[in-house]
Image 1 (cartoon, one colour):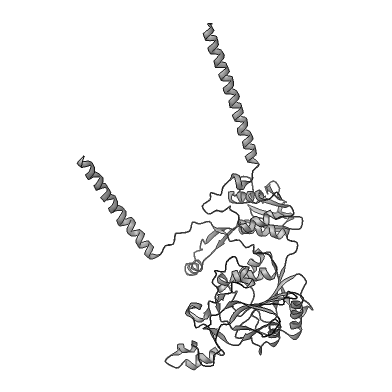
Image 2 (cartoon, rainbow, N blue to C red):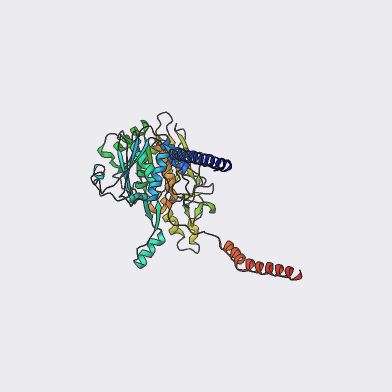
Length: 491
């Protein structure tokens, strides 16, 4: 072999060795980087590319998770091969925000007795059990994927008998964050629902929202106790139709004087200082009193359809409104009576919902309607007449004893939190409830609709874009084509 050939082979060998070494270095570098990236949290390595942002956690959740002071284990109950990608990704997001959260996968086929330690019910696949040293909470798959039906769905079902499909919501974050807050809370406040005076039952929706805030609910007959239980976050009297007794009055006043919190919802048809003197005395002790009669709005911008379907103004500076995520909300208060402050009560009173200055009160609406029933202008029954009290009235107000911390929140519409109006008023009610129960902030998190929502455009916009697509674009394309053809023809 010639010297040139030897030198060429030597050079080739060196280059091959160098290339092999460089390849090994690159492979080692990639492995190290891979291992390092694998240690990074999911929020850094995996972006939420879902069109509905199913996995993006809200600030409320992030604050709760990052502030954990104790370990939380989240047991993901799913058979091998049937895991739900949305739930798995959501759980990974939680653990990436805190080392306090541990995720454990449990296959019920290989560990059939595991769930029985936490619930007597048959647990559905793809459910989650959240546990701390204090307590545990079961989040079923039905709570993670909820279905809601519209009034149109119910109407069609009633007319046709065909079961509606409804709208499926992914409520994973709301359900899991509520569970974490529940298992780590030192104390869980109780909302005591006062009974025995013809009160309206709280709806299933109200009770579910309270549960979502980890506020327990229990009924309470005041005549059976000498004092409000010490675990009470608040008590509520929801539209009673008869008065409380003097003994019950004293129990409530003692509770408030010790810093207790109370929600009072009343009906103009049954509540007044004359018909319910004992309950009125509780309100008066906290600087509030009722204006007898039905409030009517004189400002068309402050009522809906009828002048007694009030659209009151929200006092943005009130403590309850400040607890809202946004004060840009619409509340509807039909059939309300007025509330005014008692002079020199010594309590701090502020309106939460108020009418316009054009409002007035009809003391006896039935007599007024009858008076105008046989006239040519029956609608005048709802117009202001001489002698009707007028001006701006509270229809929801709060009062506080700044020395003891006792608080009263009073709403004067009996349908304030009924199912018909809860979609409008529920946010304000829950803001009041969480504030009175001294929860720093609401943890209710809206679910995300799994269906892609249709784009809603106005008829004017639809006509404009229709013209653009049907006329402008085709005509423009033809004109442009002719211009190009003509230019090329002249060349």
